Amino acid sequence: MKILTFNNSEKHQPKIEKIKKYGTYQKFWFDFENNRTTSKEDYLYFIKKIYPQAYYTFNGHKGVKKNLLFFHVYWQLPFYLIGKNIAPVDNIMHIVNETVLKIFQEKNIEKKYTYIADVIYYSFFTPVRIENFKKPKIVIKNT
Image (cartoon, rainbow, N blue to C red):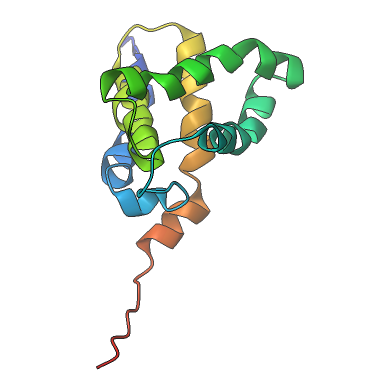
């Protein structure tokens, strides 16, 4: 008889691959600006974007409210690691490509951190967003 064990990184391998494939491109993060410093409105947009998935994952508003601190810390972390004057796109790319990716790759990690990373992942790596990113862009040059 063979015993199969699944650790966190094996379970999340498809997510890890998608983050590595799409998350490193600034064009994938089309809804976050690249030409200005991050503001409070960007944080509110981030929360607005993840709220529906968080509501579903944490069973309602009380669950979201209880875990909102984690999302706030994830949003603030790049400011301390990269610098205060970073663009919103750099912030979200750091959150996904560094923090969320490391959580998915970690072998033994608490489930609450995995749930937080899942909320961020499923909020931004939607099939529609991936398909729109993969569509060829037609550029017409006026000569």
